[in-house]
Image 1 (cartoon, rainbow, N blue to C red):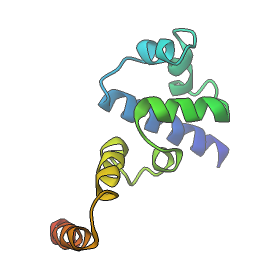
Image 2 (image 1 turned 180 degrees about the vertical axis):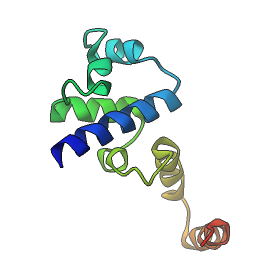
Image 3 (image 1 turned 90 degrees about the vertical axis):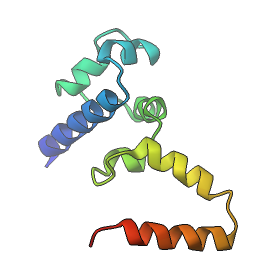
Length: 106
């Protein structure tokens, strides 16, 4: 189970980093780490500490929950949408709920 978690974590990090169009080296340096830091995580050499995990999520524009939820393909976009939704009134929310419900393929 632990090995599967490491595999999933590394794959998710690679997917989200690539989607952000940033290199592992650049991301490592942006986080204030050595240039091989993210590459080592992606090659499953080690996992980040909990505090580093939060920095990784912040860099990727996602939450830890959404990072770990592989069912959410675009967590940074979802986060931006949720921020916008928080500014709407009840009628607007209900309208958007109807639109999204119509878009979801069952």
